[in-house]
Every structure is written in C-alpha cells, then in structure tokens.
Image (cartoon, rainbow, N blue to C red; front, side):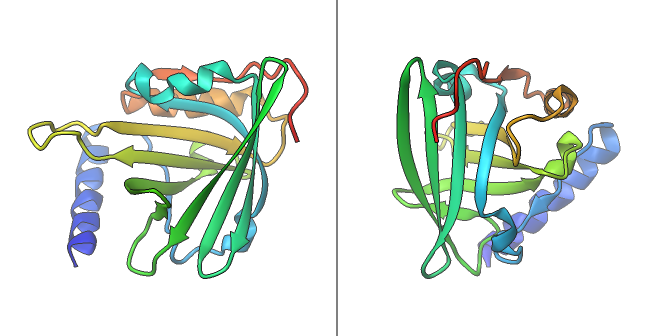
Length: 190
C-alpha cells in the first residue's frame, strides 16, 4: 500500500516538475508488467550519469562492458557482465527478483536498492534501455539519496554518437551532469 501511494506521489511530483521545467522525462518500464523476453540477451554499456562522481567512478576503470540478461526460475533475472579492464576480462553476475507488488526489481543482497528500467526513447534509441539504481540516504537526517545513477545500454556495440549525446543532454537537464562513456579501444570480453 505504501509503495503504491509513494509511486503515485512521485508521479504527481514529476508532472508538476515537468510543467515548471522544460526537461523531458524518461518513460518508466514497470518490470511487473513488461514482456521480460524482449529484454533478454546481450546489452552494451554506453554511458553512465549522476550528479555525483562517487556514483559513477567505478565505471571509469573499464574500457568496455557487455552484459547478458537471462531469465531464471520464479520471476528472476540474472545479469552477467563481461568487463574489459586493461588486458584483463572480469566477469560478474547479479541476480534480480521481480515482485508483483513492485515496479522495480530487487537485487539479491541489496534489497534496499531500487533498480528501475526506463525506455531508451529518452536517448532517441529504440534499441536501448536505461537502467537506474538508487539507494536511500545513509542517515535519516539526509534528504539526498546515497546513490542515484542512470546507465545507458544498447543492443548493438556500434550506435550513433548522437544517442549518447541525447542521453547526456537529457540527463544534464535533470542536474545529472557527471558522466562516463567507455573508450571501447580494445576488444570486448565475451
């Protein structure tokens, strides 16, 4: 009940904000209702944005990243990342649970983190998806989330630079001006 009320409140706030500020908003893809099959498979990491360096700093060490989303049993998705760091390939997996009462996914081991999917149309890319991770403030006296970042993923490793530019421009309009784009100078780890 609280989650529904909170979602409704956030929706109304975003409408009011959009009326006052001419920034476009991404379209939320509610994980409990979307066709998960269309998002399975390979995704290439193209950029990350935040309003703080600390939220995206870990991406700076990578030359390239490619992720695979697979469906497991019981409304569970497994995200496996193959990341190039120098000459080394690093592989890591994360498990996400889809719960019928929530619009986001619950990451195993980090149940306090919100994991949201947004439409790639915000970056003017039909073959893209935007993944957002947020975490609540560390202290109850703080108002700002302790983590808030958007990450752009594309179905193809070669996309127009205009897609990333549009993503960065729309993010900057929402005060998310710190960004990282991987150089992709070496072969992808697959």
